[in-house]
Image: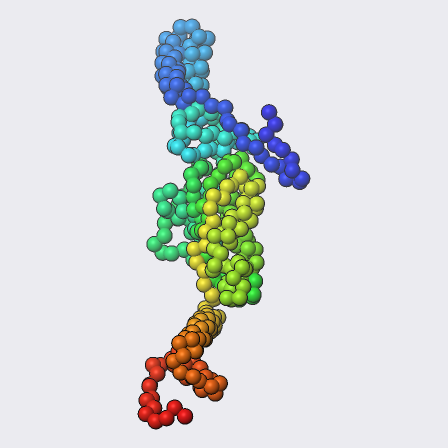
Length: 347
């Protein structure tokens, strides 16, 4: 069976299931054989000590010692225990032997060794959280954080990568602080172990790159005139889906599946946060004023129409202009109007 498929200058590995036997049966049989070998070894010593059948005694002694003290203990090395959603990638004398999957007690070739290049990895950036919520932290780790010691077994469970916040320029050139969390799992153990040097570090770096590539395509926010345009703040679901697609295309070679990507933090960088807050406040004030003016104009039009329709009072153009001015002042002012009562003639 061919397990290597060349792709350009790189060798791509397809996952195959390692040959194994029932571990409990091998354990009992090997233990029994070791006990029998020890008995044979002792009997050979006794025969040699009495000087009877020297050749037979020598053969029994050598055979008993060979299996009881060398071969038997070596056989125990081939016993492997796997929990649910765990896997072992095995190599035999430098070649890919196969992957052991599924919960159970197995026996494989004692000389096959497990390989996991991510064992004991500390990421240069980001945090990987496993099912027990322990973390692998990189540079600048918190004093109370506990580094997880990853064994030679590969976890097939769904895991979370919480990368550090990054400062990225959006499409308009404004620096923004963005944080992202990625839900992922291993789907091809051979690719994860052999195609990349360290799949955890590879995932973290590709997550940073994908985040930068996507964020620079969108502005942080949009104006009221461009409601159809997507932004980081207003279209977070679309942006997260774009990050997921970008990241999945990069980690396919490592045998990883990106289940979900979500933006967990989004804000302007501190150096421009104050100016952008003033800009947002000014934009909000302008929008509010525009709404107030539109409403006031409508109310003035309605008032003039009702006065004319009901023939309450006849106003010439000059008085209409003065009335419109007064109503707009009252309706658009920031403070309550102070009424002035005119007790004389209107004119």
